[in-house]
Amino acid sequence: MPQYVAIRTLPGITPDALVGAGARIKTCAAGMSSEGAQVRWMRSFFLPSASQTHCYFEAPSLQAVEELNQRAGVPFEQILEVAEMTPESV
Amino acid sequence: MSSSERLYDPNRVLTGAMHAMELARSRGAQEISPSDLLTGQLLAVARFGIVEFGDRALDLALLDLPYDMPAPELTVRPQYGAAVQEVFTRAARICRGDGGGQLRPLHLLVALSEPTLPPLQRVLVALEVDGAGWRRLLAGIEPPEPASGGSAAFCGAPSATAATALNAAYAGEDLLSPEQVAAELGVHIQTVRGYIRRGKLAACRLAGERVIRIRRSDLQTFVAPPVQAPDGAASSASTP
Image 1: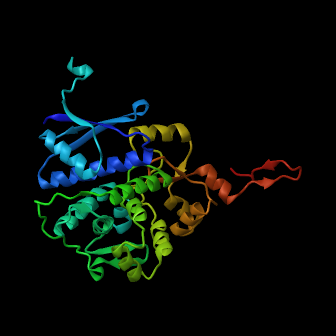
Image 2: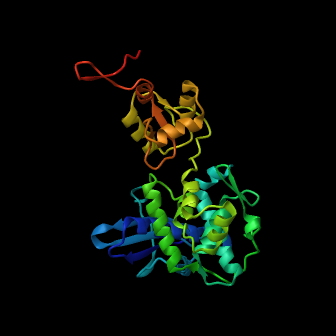
Image 3: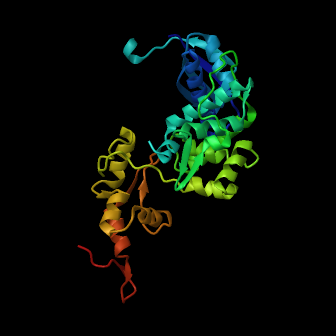
């Protein structure tokens, strides 16, 4: 399954708003999966110095990740496909 | 699974959100409203259409809430509107104030305690409470105890990290469940919970976990509180 990263800049976001956004993503992903689009939120990283979050998803297409974020009401600048690399894989 | 267990079950948040999506979809709405979310969460914690809040029971059928959900209309793909986005943020804040950890249906229901919401108005009428009474009902729902007892191992509960933190904090301490304390004191479990709520009996709750434990030393202090020695220095009543 392809993996994607959603990059967002959220200046001034509070920890509670971040958690709330995560809960919306999680619940929307469950809803979309029940509709047949297997979108999975894998993990996110928050970069405090840049007020950015990088959220990683597993999904059949980039459009599915876009739809998930739109339905969850979580803004993003761009969504890019990623290739995973780990210490074990090199 | 009882209503109180469902109210504390993080997975029910997902179930409730899916119900909310289906409710919006059944109306052909493009946005999920706070009323959808509230109704969805109530449906998610109900069993056969009944939600129990302590000794009070709420029959969702009497409220015209569709505990048997309509078939989804997949051409409509509703999204969270601004009001629901704010509800999730409030729920996260409430969850943090309640000890943190995963978001639970109870936190969403508290965040949705807005008496202007039509489904909540019907709930308040059915339960014969006002907004404050509703929040009191929610506040009175005790977290479920773990499926099996045992103190040191914290059976079935926490992550390895949590267990490590527990061990570091209470190494060598004899930890008791509220049920064990009730048995030792010969009082009802609710009495013990009342002692804890009112701060008379010290109890520990691991951050992010619902399990409550009482240290043996705290129980001994509770049973035989420190007394003031004649010379003014504090000392403990003699204990074994």
